[in-house]
Image 1 (cartoon, rainbow, N blue to C red):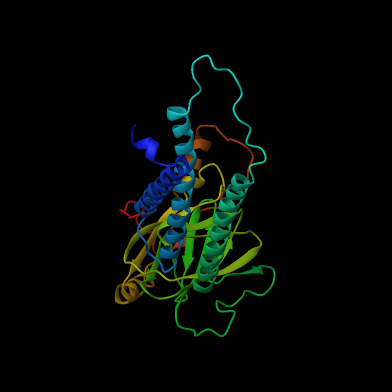
Image 2 (cartoon, rainbow, N blue to C red):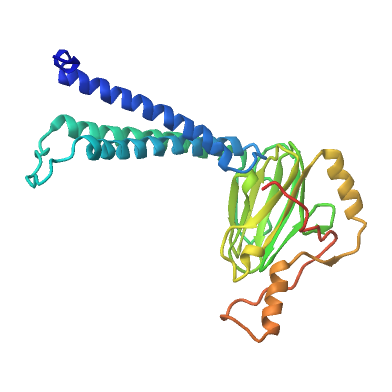
Length: 310
């Protein structure tokens, strides 16, 4: 007589399932914690909320994947039909308990994701409110509510393929300079096609629609140089439509303003335009499209070769 003779099969099954779920939960928690390392550094107030939501969804996805693959592996390894046994297995139709379980578990997970996602979206809206205006009407003010007027105000103008940032002091730049821990208010404007204002380190993205002006705001929380990317397909070389975002102390930001406002204007950064011009010189006109805009005149063209953190 061995140990199996003393243990009820149902109790043995419950213990086995409980142990498997426990291991699944531990591995899912580890994977969720690991997922933070897959993302760029957190450089805005919104970043931690987005990362926590991503980790939460990664943990749930891992739990489901390991649960399903574990059952499949357990069946293949320990419950395979004997050799030459071609008979049908026992039907599971009508098993009320099993149907209740596989209905309630996904329902619970979907509700949990929906509640948490809604909570994060509400938080992000409060951190960086945005409004869409018709550009044919009067240019909207930066603040559309009674919020305090403290902050930095910048116009973001997107083109095929360049970024231009206009500051209230009356100058323009190809790089975005903003002070740390201070709310920045943008008016996003497109001169031709749809562009995407996306800074991965900030975890924020906003489409820029031709014919509209979108007010948008964010708060940087970490000094450094980050990358602004055009997240929308805005033409053949849109992937080159990138520039740097420099988050610096308030004193360094003010010093940059004082220097830049005195500079004469030059051609702005336009790497994609340069590549497009080279292609035309070879006689390759490509597909008919909107003609790219000339480089804007800016006071600070920036340095695209500066190292950035993401």
